[in-house]
Length: 468
Image (cartoon, rainbow, N blue to C red; front, side, top):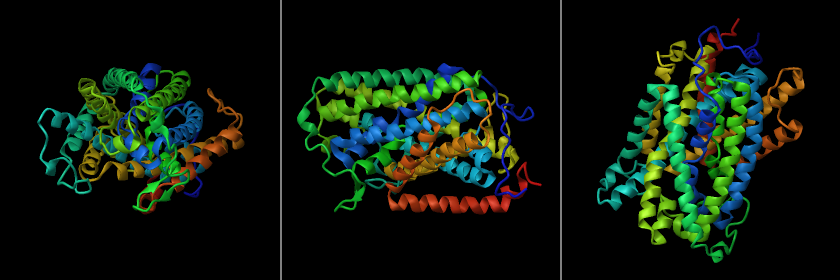
């Protein structure tokens, strides 16, 4: 069988006892999704997006959220059809063949790892803002990496939180999910407080001009890529997280019900929260003021004369942003685990510890994410993460459509409505967002996947479980 076309069998049965423990119910999965979605995107990247699109960043949120909603419907169908670890990698492997599956899996490894790093850098901004307010600020050399602004030696807080979350995940899946559930509640309460205070200072004049940089992504005179679509391509980062739920499919107690509720429910809830927070932030402060802060929500509250509530927001971010790192590190380890179990990576990496955790890949992911977080600025990391995610979304929508056409009789507990519309529109939207990313991001993504092809041809092609 050609390695270009051989496909993973579609089965709801897990592989020969070498699987992960089913310990998660739908509240855990929905909290996993909300925990992954509500994080750096709204606490930190709202400032980056506002700097690129002005008040029209609300439109950027709507566009990115709409594309993610379509992708979420495709994920819900594929996750309930194949409740196995691996997410888009598994779906692409089954729908479009091993080579495409490998490329998507390799992209997911990039996505999840750099997301962990990006959120760690966002967390560091809030942690340092809090430390400075308490006159406990770190030396400049330890507050940012060489690529930061201003440049330093290492972003020590980002390294610290990444390794701390790695340790939490090693404790156990259910224990990690329970901690995540509690901290998600903290995040939601904090955002509700922000909305309540900000709306009392709402000034409609802050929305004029509404779209100062236009709609299409373009490079401005200062060399910065701006426009509604440029912002959408970056704050797209703010919406994904639901895809991490699909990586937990193998650990869901009732996949048919729980995965659908978790994926679709978390997307709907977070879209509503995001729109409210963005509108409140823009109404309370001019975009060109708060967009320059690494902790925009706390900055706005301090600027409004509410330092105590700003501290509450800062504390909430410090406590709750690590849940995003936890969700995506969880997702990355499950993708890595699935690829190793399929033979495309060394099978020793698929070793599961007594607590049901894939220990080797969890430690490896934590160390790599800590190195990236320590040395690179937030925007570059977030943009690179978006490239991998967009590839995964395209692959999931594509796999859904291929299997609908080739195997229409398969049992599908959840069926994507109007799949012949939802699938193509999701793919087209993702491709447009990808095109709107900076050229450097696209070049780095291409280089990463070129390396991946070399690794696959040298190792995975001959060691795959499906190899003749």
